[in-house]
Amino acid sequence: MILTLTINLAIDKVAILEKFEAGKENRIQLVSSLPGGKGANVSRALKSFKEEVLICGLKGGKNGEFIEEGLVREGINPILFPIEEENRVCLILVEKSGVVTEIYEVGPRIEEEIQEKFLNFFREVWKDFSWIIVSGSLPPGFPEDYYARLLRGRRGKKLFLDFHTGALLKALEEEVFLLKINEREFLRTFKEPDLLPAIKTVIEKFPIQYLVVTLGENGVLGADQEKIYSITSTYKPGVICPVGAGDAFMGGLVHAFKEGKDFKEALLLATAASISNVTLYEGGRVNPEEFERILKGKYLQIEIL
Image (cartoon, rainbow, N blue to C red; front, side, top):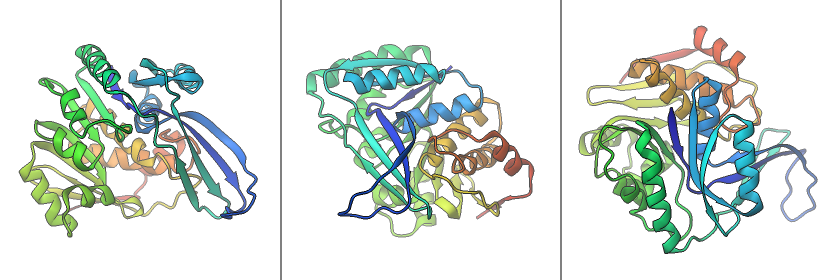
């Protein structure tokens, strides 16, 4: 079984409209309302691959009840810590032209006492898991070293990370199996102007077994201690909503490693999962027909840099 952690869970509402006009009345059509946050999306991707997955995070108010019930309906097992504050709601507006506007609540501010209780709660939960994915930013008021403290004593666990800036730098004080991060967040976190030299520097400096930097439409760079792989695609999907594609990528990576695939194979599988997700409204979900078409066709190119 796989454990995902997203402390700052949300309700993700996806709506379509003709064109978003700031300062004017906009009428929208809601097409999806699901549990959200990066870990929920990653869990959704893993369920697409028939993996058994459990999610841990904070649950508050009516929004928290909606999130918990929605996860159960999707076959994702929730172990959530109750709080008094309401979980956040995020609105994703998709224009007919394909332009996407994301309006995200930052989430509730959690008192230090509750932070400490959740830390102890999570450490009890993770004892039974060796595959653990930690995704998403910390809620307001959490200290920068919170993830580092939360993940202390990680020996024997395959740890996958997807967050950034100071919280990530603190968490990288001990060994990590894989770090996935997008290009903008990578450059912002490690304060390097040039991507390829920076990837080499980071993989040498920090105890990371695998480093993956996603480049959006430009593909993926994946590094281990010996090589940097570049994955590009010639496939042109019918894009519906790109939000959650990076989380589908993470779900594909974890599934591939769990199936015994090597790093190069995992990168290819995850890329196909990510591209397939943009053809759906649901963040993280893998479109099985598109996934098979991409993976079995000659659309993905891999190069050693």
